[in-house]
Length: 474
Ligand code: NDP
Image 1 (tube, rainbow, N blue to C red):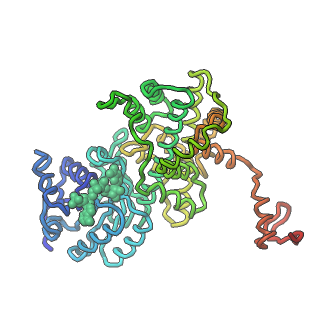
Image 2: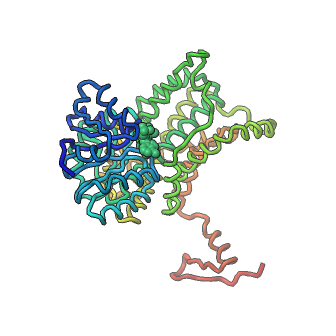
Image 3: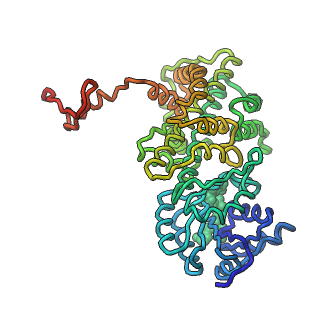
């Protein structure tokens, strides 16, 4: 295959691929593009005057690969799963040793490890790269989490550093580790995103059903919160969505939207991987489950009728200003706990797979471009920079913050429970915190039960070794 002039090729011109290709082109790189529907490749060039000069549309895969400079960088941006394997199989015979295939979709990291092993054995390279920021991020600056063969990073870095989001001038991109490291980190990013969004929705639920606020009034509160500790993209867009009016009915937009949330799988993967690693990512799990429950709307409507008359307290939320201040503190505290769980999952994976994940660097590249971007991530980066962190809940700054605000979380969860407003992620955060800070837990009883019914043995507090007790026959 002859050498072409394009710096990189993008295969798959959907929402993400097209925008990423334009971002690359706008930053002065020549990008060859290819798509199943080839007209999209030509439209990308023709519909974007100026930028389009750097876009090289191609009709066939052969044309696409020959348009690339060696070593060739082929970036796949197609839906995760078998399609990635199929597209890679079509491209592989056209490549030469040293060329790099980059899967920039939301892959299951287990697939990335498998692909990485298979591809590296052939003399080609494979990079699993998480890209966050949605459509706008892809177009103007995403956060990019790179995993794969270390030696490929110098080839990618000049392009990625230009197209990535910048936080105070620093590009939000880094090589995070071999094989599946980048996609694993992206999965946990999305898991944290699920938890963050669910906890915001729970606070919205209290504002709506516990206090009786209108969306426009809530929007003002979120705008205010966005000036302090909670300042983040998700809080900002919450205010925007709450302030929006439906042009058809003139009602608040959120009031006409069906309460059934979709999911594509990354939140579920995060929970599964946390479970496999023995880490309690309970806020993420609560968020994934809440989306599942939300999808059974008809069933919920029937249950609502069945339990209409159960005894619950009618009012626990009193003074509005105090309640709002308490909720702000509660959300901040629960957010710290959710991030602690996400980071604990990454730390465990790093240990298990020998990745040596740079946890502080991960916080740094999440500060801009991605959906969970926030000032708060700068605090996490500083905590990791200050020294080794076992769990964020043990980092000095966070210990002080959680200790000062945990009562607000307790109050909000307790009041919500009494008036029957579900707060699964907020209460999961509180339960995890109480479990985590308790020196003497209750699994001594679990161990006793296990030893009784299955002779699973236990360890004793007063001496070393493993013991089995002759329990009375039951
Ligand atoms: P889209 O659905 O917008 O685009 C899919 C692309 O894949 C199109 O180019 C489409 O071609 C191509 N494609 C689909 N099916 C086939 C097939 N059978 N054979 C060949 N080509 C096919 O997806 P997105 O751009 O939204 O997502 C791409 C990846 O990025 C996914 O892994 C997603 O999870 C991830 N991602 C998405 C984000 C988002 O906000 N959308 C954010 C971060 C990551 P054609 O034009 O011919 O249909």
